[in-house]
Length: 297
Image (cartoon, rainbow, N blue to C red; front, side):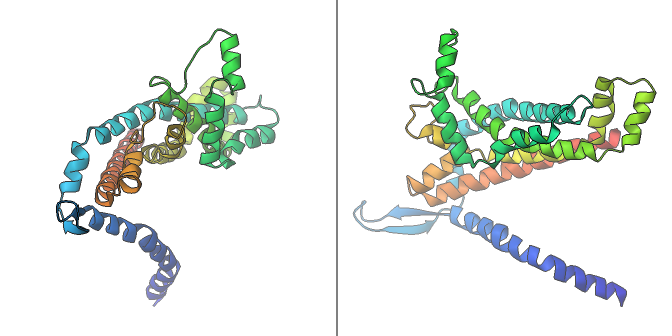
């Protein structure tokens, strides 16, 4: 009887979640898969109307065969290799600094570092486009007066420009996550390490960081998934700045261009599904790898 009541209570409590999950995730994903299996063709030598025909996996082969789509994954690879280590190390270093006994005005710096995350991504990208633009930006003027010349819109500067915007947006947010995890550590453990003669660096690297491993893994996983969805920042850089960022610079931008500029919704859906599969595979690899390391530890 108690077991039946427990099962009924669990069903009632979890029911709203599964309804929302179905409506927000399962149905749109299923529709995207269905849409990716069809394509629109014109009849009558181009003078007739369009008709939707079943094309099977043609849209997937077309996306994979498109050089622009493949190069987008190369851009994502460079972005992840550049952005993820900087984000994790920077956020963790800031959290450890705020958690140290030398830190002052913790609340002020927490708020100051978190505030950029409160700015919408589009607004943040527009702000940085202004700061990247010569003849407008005080940053560029200061760099040039110091003999430093760097074109943030050049092919070499596009990736660092996007990484800088993303770091500005997300560094403080992840710092707060790490700081909260550090605050949950039993202070007696740290006091015992201090009594045993461990210095601040030893306590931070050998005690604090291992104890918040779960938070580091969670942030790494979410950062990998978010990195694969890179869209807003390069899209703003692409619009009217003369930037080297093209309309197909990332897979998300490729799908956006296919859908809303070329009206090829089947190709856009196929590209989106391929990107989702890539994200799922990388998520599995990250969780499996970190899980094995945790078991060994």
